[in-house]
Length: 168
Length: 315
Image 1 (cartoon, rainbow over the protein chains, first blue to last red):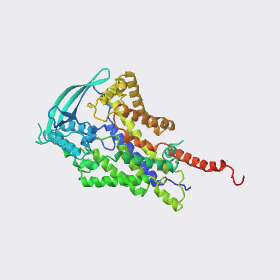
Image 2 (tube, chains in turn orange, blue):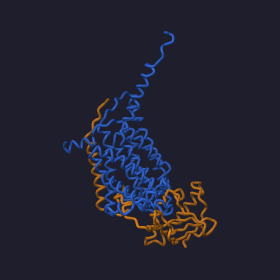
Image 3 (cartoon, one colour):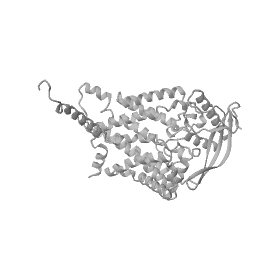
Image 4 (cartoon, rainbow over the protein chains, first blue to last red):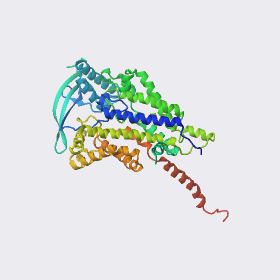
């Protein structure tokens, strides 16, 4: 068995790395930047840190099937729009909906979702139904005692059809 | 004990090479398993309206790359993970795994959502790239044995990588605890916040993360006492975790407690911590397993001789 000594160089690397980790984490904790301004891979880890209200809302995408209006499926499976995941999509759509350039970027985002959904479906990457359009709705839920939630409001935001490629 | 000797003992107390060698195998095996189905190249086809680069990408003015480029990077990364896992050309393999992996994970975090399970793996790959993680349980080691190279003994070289992961983890948990106290105070425990989060997580359309593994979330949510106790336990583990850096006993309690906490959150509420949990492979004293295996093998060799029936010819 041979002795392996820790070299002075390695000690300096360890000290430097430890200082970097502590400094990076401290900066994030002290400055508490909003979600998208954090200094990845460091983070203030704010998720679930705020008191949630009894009502909450969010944008959700629905696929309109070839059976026409009313026949729609919520696009909840990550396989439908990969590599985008449901959580990325919800956060992004919310940001785009509040964007100053909303009228341009939101239809573009929905069109991208529809194109990708169909492209993945045709290549057999998921088994969802064929879609003729996608709809974006703002949904609102409320917590109802004892411990359940109900959908209380549904407000259409935008629909993009496959053929026309425009928003309505 | 002086501060200097405490520092020295924390980072460089001799550890057997088997601990880091087995941690390396498990870490990279799980990385391959978790990221095998992730198509990073697909991000190059996502509309640019979703592009929201993470800090290093913003600073370096990196744009969404071409499909072929990401495909090549992704393929090289997977090969690097494989080589690092088996311990072949480990210096190059671990370094390229760290560099390419940081790029790909950063890329996937630049489309609207930063998954906070990923960064610890970025640190993990970087730490392994700077360590002597292939001194045991590697093909390199086997080749050296063939050349009759002596076996490395316990050393601080095999201790510090696990300690660095522990430091990263302490920063993560402590930051999460501080954020809760800053934004909500003790009301995060007393107001039933966890109960509301559990109810939201149970709504198939209302949640924006993956579904909880168990359907027990709503049951917990309906009991104010249970959800408050769980919230208090979560906050206590997060705020106390830095003690694991200073006390052996705190490590023995807080490290497994945090592991169970993450599993419980995923089971009841839905957020996927599978990637974060990979980092725990650095903590078990794996050499106890290998020592037991060696002892069992030695016993096995002795047993047939001792218990062998008398030679029938001699009888």
